[in-house]
Length: 187
Image (cartoon, rainbow, N blue to C red; front, top):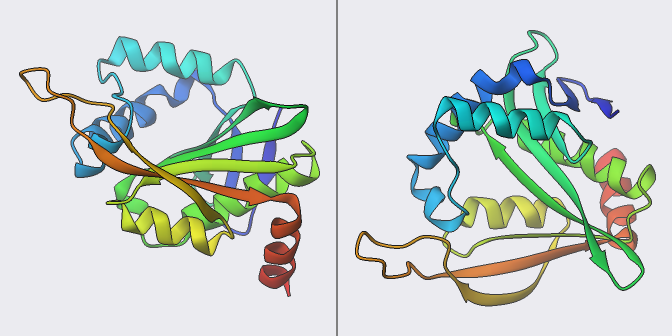
């Protein structure tokens, strides 16, 4: 079981009861321009309930809630990536757009990265985003990630089945780089 607290947030395992808030956020996300750069999410309530149950069954998907109210505002995923005997994890995140611009994603991801490197003994955390999602690129760089590669990718298609391509960046944060970032943000 994972339970992390920051100044303003509780980051915890999903509860099955989180499905409605997740549904609201995913429906919102799927209607945004950013959705074109991600795997499609289902939006039907029954499908979101199943996803929430799956998220609640493990420690890889963590609900981010406001400490003061308990309101679910997003989630952070920290999934293990098998990689040549190294402890590598993949970071993912989605936040309700009503809570963008308040530093919640930074606060939550820093806590989860600290958990990855300290408790889960990660050697490296990787993630990716679209070149066109400049806010996410800047966010990852503020967290200490370095861009390591770029490629053309496609997760979605037009109505006639033509892939919708975009430039995807891969980012990496090593344990040593995290120590420097963590000391700088703590001090």
